[in-house]
Image 1: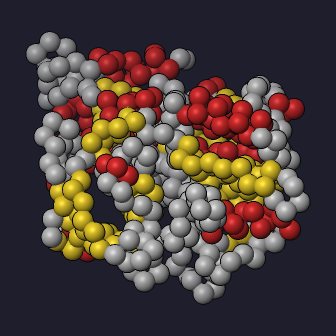
Image 2: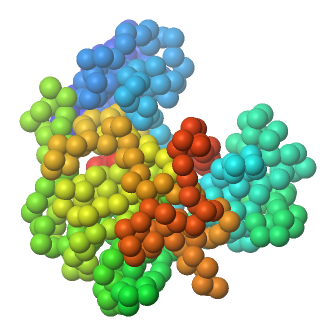
Amino acid sequence: MNSMFLRALHGAVACLLGMLVVSCGAGSGDSGSGGVSCSLAGVLGEVDSSMRDYYIYYDQVPAVELSEFDSPEALVDALRVEPPDRFSRVRDTATTAALLDEGRFFGFGYLWQRDDAGKARIAKVLPGSPVELAGVERGDEIVSVNGTDWGTVQGNGMLPTIGGTEELPEASRWGFRRRDDGEFFEVDLTRASFVRRTVLSDAVVSTASGSKVGYFAFDAFFATSADELNTLFAEFRANDVTELVVDFRYNGGGYVRIASQLSTLIAGNDLVGETLVTYRYNDKYRDRDFRYVFENESASLDLQRVVFLVDGGTASASEIVVNSLKPYVDVTVIGEETTVGKPFISNANDFCGKRLDAMEAEGFNISGVSVAEGIEPDCLARDDLTRQRGLAADGRIEGMLQAGLDYLADGSCETTPVVTAARAQRPDVRPSVRPDSQEFELQGAFLDP
């Protein structure tokens, strides 16, 4: 039973459910894909029927009264089986497609988190974003917006109203303190649309033994990532890179096919045809189970070991890469927190300008291991907000990268004090990493729609 037929069937079921309120077809409002009525009843019916059909936990979905819900987003929140699923949701189709397929994003372009002193620090700045163009850097402290202190802005939920919309941009005055010297400065920021690169920084580090270690910070698995990765790994090959540190901090996922590509670029073409990840659907659709395999990549490095840097925001497609490589390659994971633990994939169900991402199947590596419980670090090291990620122009190495280089040098998990973490001393190690808008972190593994 193919995907198109299933979607049409779901739409027909939704339409029948909606007949209690409105008729299907002409006179019932605009029609969406698969014949879904775009009335509220039709949209709610599509969500409800889908969650009771191809959703991986369909048989545990609670009974609800559709008339009690005023949006599909609220309905999904009520229907998803949590735990283990905290990921199924409804998104805007156009916004999600533009991000996944073109890398196009509307926002300020940053992530923030609180440091040990409780200060709000910029954790990530996207290239080409309003925040980067204004000269704000990772580690800078957010102080205020439009004269209101940051704690109040966050506590009162004011941020979504700041910076305007694509149709009506609005400047806002932000106050920061510099990471290095604490100097206060102000900039005007307006949300804007820009294309997100997914390789944020990269470097080749020469070690004392004369070997070459490649490093790159990878932000998301978009369709545009394919060319970025091919170019990067071709450069690594040209520079005789023999070991690799991959920075997956704050990476919320994206397309599974890009995860498959990256896995082969790392592990090499000797594994072509071997199972990378197998996806299992619910008991009604077990005939749809399938697997991704390692495929030939001309820029592959054929590495024997690799280090991954992770945090509490590392999710989904990035977890697929780590988990899928473990049976084949010497994998070491460095970080302070267990990763998100999202083993599921979804396939776009688009209707009426909405995209339902209902978790459809769970992924397992060749050893039968899922990432449902997250991936726990092998070596403990803390996100180093005192420096830019990677290798700075002045030669300074950020702490997490240094931890990876130290491990590759001597197999030791001991590293510089600024980034050493100890669970016994920090029982609640998951920092509050916050995006500047809901769409910033997808936390998803998506099949091509």
